[in-house]
Image 1 (cartoon, rainbow, N blue to C red):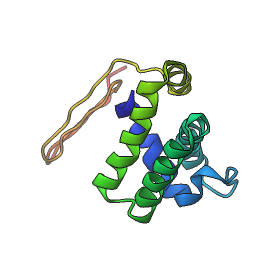
Image 2: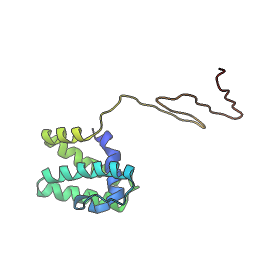
Image 3: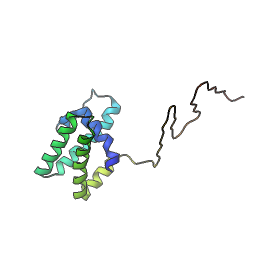
Image 4: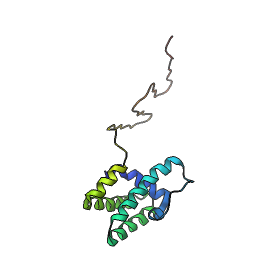
Length: 138
């Protein structure tokens, strides 16, 4: 679950910074960013509300560190760790967070290499130099 929630948490910290715990949504943010960051913010706030004072303080420190250095993978890992600990301690909280996350399609696409193409559904895909695609004949 944390692997799935990670991008939402990162987007929220990047978009909202340390204010993630105490601010309302920002209408000025791009809709796609708002959707992703908004979900991350809801997860963090839900976890924060269910923690005791010590847990809240630890979560706030993790948010502060992650927002101060959004490209620091260690800071992001610390935030995910704090949320993971909270989810392990509270099964109801884990269920609520799981319900917030979009359902997984079960599709994984791994792509690597120069000009590699990865897609779940595609009509025509061409990769390489001097590629010619001819339309079907009627």
